[in-house]
Structures are given as C-alpha cells and as structure tokens.
Image 1 (cartoon, rainbow, N blue to C red):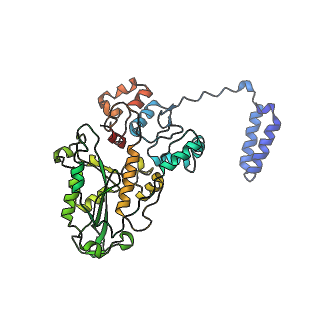
Image 2: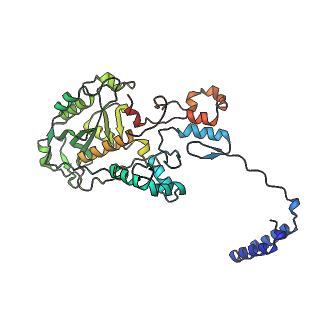
Image 3: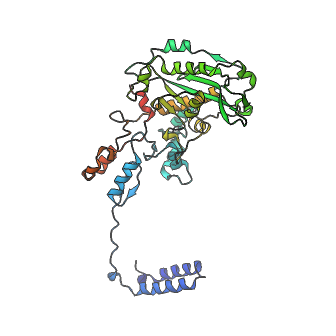
Length: 404
C-alpha cells in the first residue's frame, strides 16, 4: 500500500520514530523529507523490486551460498559424511556431538529440534523416540551405573597370563579386533615433583573385567605422591612391580601373540592384536615408556565427534557425565574407574549405525583429492548431490571397528 493512499498510517509511523529519535533533529528532518518524497510518488512510477538471487544450500549442514564455487569449496573443507554427528530431528550434520547439543540445547536452539528433544529425545545419546514413554524406557538403559572403584588396598596385582592363553583365539583374520582399556596413575618426581612417574596401572577388557592391575616401583625418588588425587602413599609402591616387567605384561596383552610386523601395518585387518582404548593415551604410553601403532589407538580425548566445537579435548569426567549419565573422580582418581568409563564411551561410539556402501574410511578421498588439480574443471560436471555424495569424513569412525 502506497504512503499517499494511507496518510494516517504514515503519520503514526512518523510520530513513533520521532518519539524514539526525538533528540536527533537531523534525523527528523531527513525522515520528513523522505515522507514528502514518498507522498509525491505514484505507485505506477515505482519499479518492482528485482527477484532475490537463488541461494545454494548444502545438503548436509544447510548452510547457504550465493555462488556454486563457494558451496563446492565448503564441501571440500567440511568433510561431510554419514559418520558425522547429526541432529536426529532435522538431520543437520555437525562437526561434533557438542555442536549438536548447542544446536538443540544451546542459548539459541533451533525451535523445532529443541521442542522435539524436550518431549521425545534422550540427552545422553541424542536419539529421538516415538513417544515420551519410549524415551523414558530407553533412558533407564542409556544411563549407566557408576563402576565401584577399586580400593587402593585391593587387587595389588593381577596376572594376565591366564587371560592371554584363554583369549588367544578370540580374534582372527576376517573378524573384528578386540579391545582393552588402560589407565595409569602418576606421582611426581624431581625436586619440584613435576616429573611424571608411573605408580599404578589398570587394564580392563570389553566386559569390564580387570585383566591386569599393579602398583609400579618408581624408577626415580618420588617427591610428591599427590595423595589428595591419587590416594597413594609410599607403602603402596614399596612392593610394586618393576616398570620393565609391567611393560612386558602390557605388551603381552596388547599383541596377544600377533606378530609385530602385522600389528604395525596400516593394512592390518585385525588378527589377534587388541585395540588400545583410553583417555589421553599419549600420557599413559609415555609414562610406561611404550609405543603402539596409531591406527590401533582409540583415544576418547582425540576422537573428533567427542571434542569441543573448537576441536579441544573434553575431560573424561565431562564426557562420562554427558554421555553415560554418571559422575567419576568425585574422590581419589581410580584407574579402574577411568578404564571402565573410557571403554564404555568407546563402545557407545562404536555401536552407532551408519548406513553407507563400501568401507566408509575414505579419509583421503575428498572431492579435490579424487580430481587432479589440473583437471579441476571437471567439478562443474557434477551435480550438488553428487558432490555431497563424494564428500567424505576426515577421521576413521569407530563404528568401522565392528566390521570384519
């Protein structure tokens, strides 16, 4: 409706703006001139507004771009794939589960998704169910009970020999590898107690059974037992196992009679060796003075879907409370408790179902890796759906550990 056809509306708008900006005389003058111009215009003299340019939308994260080359660049850098965390309501791809949580529960949540999750969604696994009743039944299973910590006086040593012998045939070619979780407790050495000295080691299997636990004789004098955190004293370590023997036991469990060359090969298909699960495995292996192939490590502190939105690691305490539904480290740090929590997180991530043809690893096969730089003009021959299909994950999803 033109201003010259509705002067009353125009005056209401003018008075409102004058009241809001009455202190600005220049603004009032300029607005008055604008109104006079609008009154003097005829509708027939006004050209219709040009149509808005069509925006291109990413099929995964729904970001919009004006130019196709910008969308292609986005697909190349975003590594969208079925292995990325997604909102169960709108199916939007996110970089991490933390991003999904901000999308649903954050300060500016998506309205539809937030309402659906509040009524039918699980805040632990971020799944949506058909009814609030089904959701409530699921949460009872999804929220796990906290493990009972091992007392510092109990289980001073468990020998893994029986475990290796019984389990030596549990994995073989064509079947998925087994997994164990490890956690080490460190005390302080050196004049200021800043040198990390391994004092306690715990290893559990996928069934949460302790297969190795021991205190470790320190190789250098301990100047800080960190008792408030570790609960350890000199008495605990007096009869501990020598570090060299601990190394042999841990490697025996890991390699499980598999040849060293097979385990180190990135093309290794499983065999009898075990995956090593933990939180901050670099610290544990460093204090044990051990190394293990990177492709056999499953570190919950370095797994992209479990990291913060800025790709910084979460604490194991936060991950356990957010994804498993219970608290840990409320008193002394217990390596058994940390082992169990890391293993549960790994199994929860591994148990996700991602429907995809092929093996889905595709870490090195993104759109511009598939096309030689000299042939980049071939990109124009693909539709946006085809480009999205060619986009791939930049990390190995743990669900692939379930595949033979």
